Image (cartoon, rainbow, N blue to C red; front, side, top):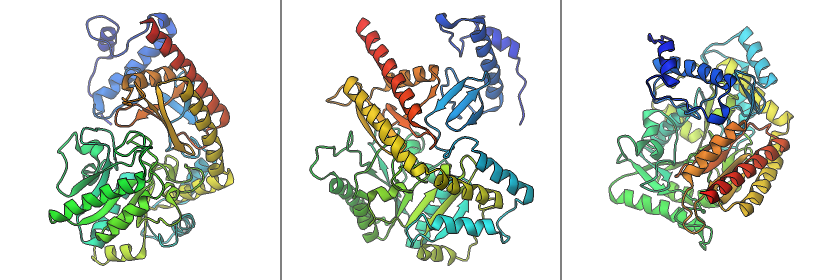
Length: 484
């Protein structure tokens, strides 16, 4: 890493009022010596980061960022030792720095870490363990390093198997800038409305269907059959594509859309969509990168919420699979894998499925089972949902509380009729929660949905603490609104 020359002292003085607009605004009631020193330390770090780190890489709480130096379980600690409750880090799936994960990585690192061109028990053992969590037909595995790599490979598999090119993805509307997101590679930006609407626009081989959001979507909770209505929208997209001479390779969707606002598709929707997609010669890809590995509680995979009669053709995994270690996977059928191999072009991923990654992946599965984290997610998630719904009755700004297990969204609105996103209020709430040492963030088409995706060790006391703090902050915000 290279740091460009920069005068810290010059910039520090300017930032505290001697000639330049400050990046850090110090509230009058907190101008203690300690607070100013704390800000000065953060400013030094930001200036060094700005000198060598792209401005397109964003920080959480960019106006007042937190420097995290360690973490354990569901808690993170800044450079001054202050503890923050982590409500959003679904990557540290079984808890930050879980001792079993750390031990597995360390022990395997002492023995061997190399590419997957050699025989190794960890690779075979891990594939077998994963297969036990999935429907029988999903029996072929490819190991990679990130969710983006997994989704890119899934797209290649679908295209090779179907010999078609086009992809159907989900979105809220043409004016929405936060919806489907499947990764940062060029191929995935092209199928992510969240990204392509801000870049080169929609490619001719990409088709967009409305996201099955029954709270603020096209067909809402009062619709007589939202499942069929939303699935028919996909059917219509397929028909329009066919009329233009296009052929569908895949329907690509998160099992529970996260960036789109913590959406829970109505049960039965995927089955009907798969029927239309298969009839068109395409395959169904379930993106489990955000929500797999027991997060929904009652099932190991979120796509299983749709019912036992639904099985995707391809499943992608990432983030929680390695508890913070770079690991990802694609699971598919023998037929699709054989079509991919028939090209004669080798698929090789240097670090995908290496012994250390597989040792960690195996240990993640062990911890989920040993600590009963699926049952825990159900119990704590139900409790958190109950507390949040009680707040919904008390605070009109809470329009909807939805979720399953430890995947929960709280939709903040300006009015009950139009359900206008309370974007500024959501940002204010998240900022105040951070000041109370709770880390939460927002998603959704209006950046107004509080998203809960904590480490799976998040407990009842944590849930009570978060909701009590939200209640207090919303009460204060309501009083401030009345006073103005």
